[in-house]
Each structure stands twice: as structure tokens, then as C-alpha cells.
Image (cartoon, rainbow, N blue to C red; front, side, top):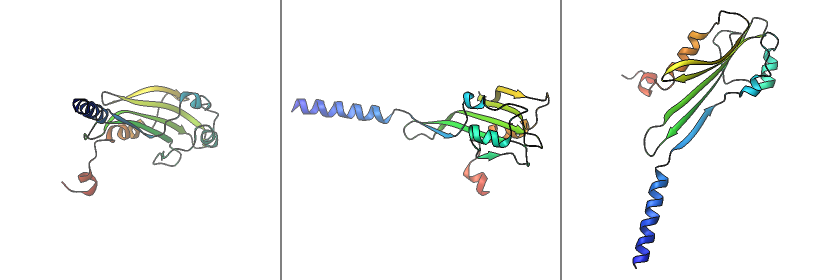
Length: 150
């Protein structure tokens, strides 16, 4: 009888410990550096980029403004709401002829957008305002704001 009780308690402890372990999920797609190395700034075209790393799920608002690859990692523990623990964006910009002018990788550090890597043909970088908005707004929108309920 005592042995059954000890087994039951041990089973409960193992079950409880397993329920508290975090669950990690990845959302989106961000190409790795080896794939991005195939893209030559000033030479590669949209078709070259699509062949090397695929087409993105997000593009710039203006025609020809760029492609954005967004990936994030979320952590869920027990019944708590999921928490975003990392976010990364790769931005590939094109000129009017469809040739790559810029490849940048951005991340978040303490809630601030941080440039992780950058390859550009020009010194003035366009589109940072949109990217900062994209990186800063994810996770700050709730259902009431989207539906107009306040």
C-alpha cells in the first residue's frame, strides 16, 4: 500500500514538473546568413533573390520599395500569455530596375530596433521609418484597438 502511494506521488511530481516547462514556437521566416551571402548588392535582381531565399510574406507599401522577411520566437509557460522573446527582420531593398540596393538584418534589444548587419550601395538608407514601425508595433496591438472598442 505504501509503495503504491509513493508511486502515485512520484507520478504527480513528474506530471506537475512537465506541465511547467516552457513551450517555444517560431513564427515567420528569416533567411540565414549563408543564404543571404548569395545575394550580391548592386548585381542580384528580384528573381535572383527569390531563387536564393524565396519570396517574403511581406513587401513594402510602395512598388519596388523592398521585401521584408520577419521571424519571431515566442515562449509560453503554463497558462500565462505567450511572450515574444526575440524578433528579427531582414529587409532587401531594390531600385527601380529591380536590382538589390540594400540588405539589412534588424533585431530587438530591450524593445529598441538594432541593426545587426547591413550591406548597402548608397550611404543614405531608405525605409527605416517603416521598419521601425513594423518592429515596434508587433505585440502592442490588442483586439479592442483593431475592432474599435475602447
